[in-house]
Image 1 (tube, rainbow, N blue to C red):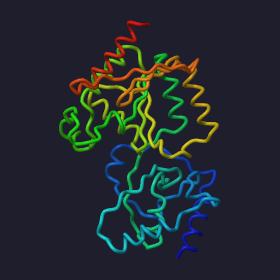
Image 2: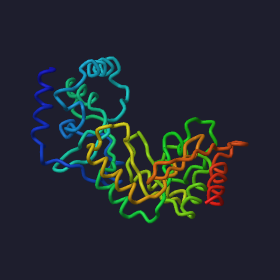
Image 3: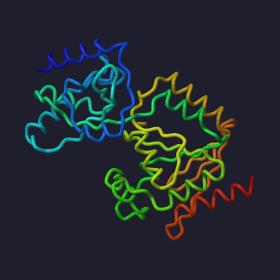
Image 4: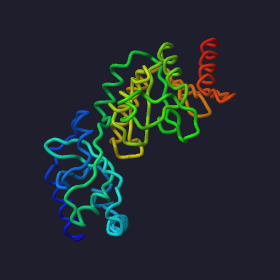
Length: 287
């Protein structure tokens, strides 16, 4: 069985070499298609899983196989994919689950289709940006609530509340509104594999526009080293200042000199967003 899968993996990579690339997928398609024929899923040649010198971990594959045999009715975490030209879907995250499904003879597998931000998307975001300073903020650690007892914004009304599952931290829309009005482009980041259109549309429910959306940052091989250097160079040329906001600190970075100034957020009475705005107002007065 292992040999048969290894042959399939090599054949898939060779078959689509120089032909395949991700394409954007419409919202309705992403909502309706929660599973796919396993033969329509194709390995990502840039993922470590597909590289002979690294290759699949058959220990992990075997662990998934054991779980599938012992709990066949349990809903497994979907395989994250992008729609792919010329056909089917490119696996973004979940190669080992895909291998387990394949080796056990599954015909259909659970999927979640996303539209990731690739190099050309990020370049376009930079080129269309309108300001010379930006704010960077982590979706997972700052924008979205990390616990049920954390104060949050009211969920969007029906039917949007059904589609958007995360809870927005109380004060984020007001903070983003303040940043936009004071000449900052807003860039959000996430290690998770959110679709860029999902995040953009979710923010619009709170009357917020974001300039840059970069997701799936936990995948170190999403972009080549040269591509990342090109993006970093473009950002440094576009923005004189970067303001990084996290849970406890506001960090102002001069992108030319690389000098930075730290400002601790005063979260008195739990009003985190006002604490950030107070820092920004003081910075504006001191400028």
